[in-house]
Image 1 (cartoon, rainbow, N blue to C red):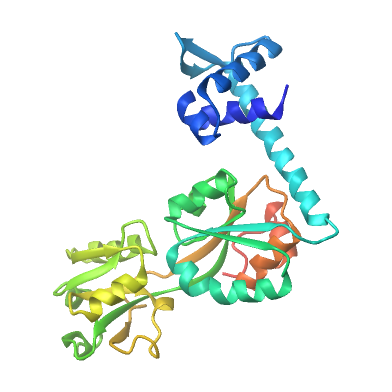
Image 2: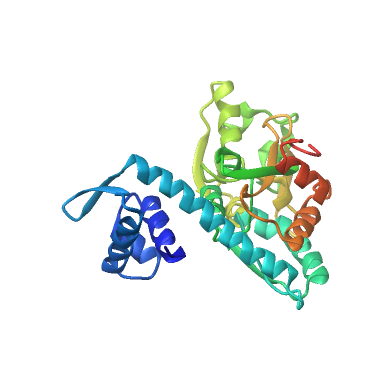
Length: 313
């Protein structure tokens, strides 16, 4: 039995029993994957998959047991490598962070700057995507830590910890009629074309729910995943923007005015996530505490032992 065979097995299951897709993901050939799985079944003396010709149609009951064991073995093998990296004399290694554009652009620069100062030998990799992509990258171990506001706490395999809370902000061109409508209301916002985030990004669901509760239909004429894109089109006079408050800087965004919207939309919580079965290296603990000071190592370890929940928020 080889770890490679277990990797092939788990990837085939992850790809919906599509051997071709698994082979492509593993950068190998379809016959090679099929051969290794057949060799594993022969060694174990059982069928892991039911077949219709050469096609896999479902996982057998003993196959499910084997798959669960394979996932645990691969997780422990990955953790052994992480232990080796953590205790290596040269103190090097890599930290892969998956996050959304807004977090990468507005939250993480100062965190990463301080982290690099503390760990100059650690190579950093930053991946940007949707919250669902962020969760997926952490799940398949393409990333060590995921940072996002949505999706992370929907996966049982991930442990998520709250980092900080933030609110939405309404932005308009200077001199816009809304600047004279105080206090700002959702009904007033609904009178203008709106430019805001894509449906799965940066608290957009809370924006939608606020309008739904008041039975208002907002005129969302443009969506984007990038706060800077939203602000650009607002500055052109194409609509009123709804963005994360962290994405607005009065000193930089001089063509825009910002209107607080904490009374209009629910607050948002940005979270950090990692696999529950991952062995955390010391620099991962350090990064999380730089991101959210309340997330000290003792707090994280207590949460892993199910002795705490949502520390600090």
